[in-house]
Image (cartoon, rainbow, N blue to C red; front, side, top):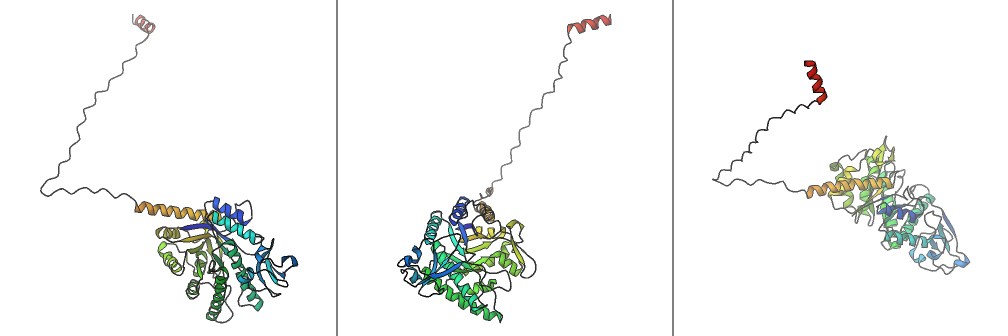
Length: 388
């Protein structure tokens, strides 16, 4: 099954809530949406007296992402979410414009399932695992909070980047990031009971973790990791336009082989300049076209979710869907075209019948000259007088 959708609330959506965006995606004929969890505004505080004895997810107007006996921010724990709050416990809440509390998340999840909209969630873009200890802890918490929100929304993936390499050897940085991803994947699997998986996205910048080889190797080494096929980023990093299906198909096959479940794919137009310099554009203006990818998807029975990260969001999502449907129609036409009629061979010893000559047409009758119109009597009399 092929799904198409935008990375965020559609631009044409009149309302700006998450449920408005999901309904608008459905009305546009799309079936997927990547929720953007970009701004993080956490607040850690002690439990109030009126909140004692309640479950963290039962608090009204409080989007709780962590709870525990410490006075500082703690990793989200499923057991703490299922246990009543006690006095002197601390909770961490988020101020997020797309949801106010867990009841809001439940309503959004129910709407997405009723409208058959596949939800995923993108964690904050800026992470730094090789800076200060505070930066590393904050990056870890942001990805964990994204996992909590994804679980509440019923999203199947929490998508993230892994940030810059460290100052030392690049292979050492890759090894450290692999260990970090193992911890994050194990935590997410326990918290969501396997319902949410961590998806790692490639990067278009050479100084940021996420080449094609690194992402695929990470998916092979860490159980539960989903590699994201972000073609604009790969094109910018490798300086390739992927102009033909023959050039693009090996890349698609690599990601399909490294993915257990549907392939997750991001696409937009892209313009690249120098090393590490590129920008995302509408698809029609970019240096990478969607047509070769549409041909590949139409020729194979892939389960794919295609997310438009273009500045035009839902417009380019619908454009990609149109190109895919055209490619699918061409494939169907080739497969079901009627076979050309074959003339039977003449039998041995029997000469073929001569073709009958067409009957000669009778000659056309000669054209009749039109009769001259008769002149009026007054004109004839006048002419007779002149002759006399």
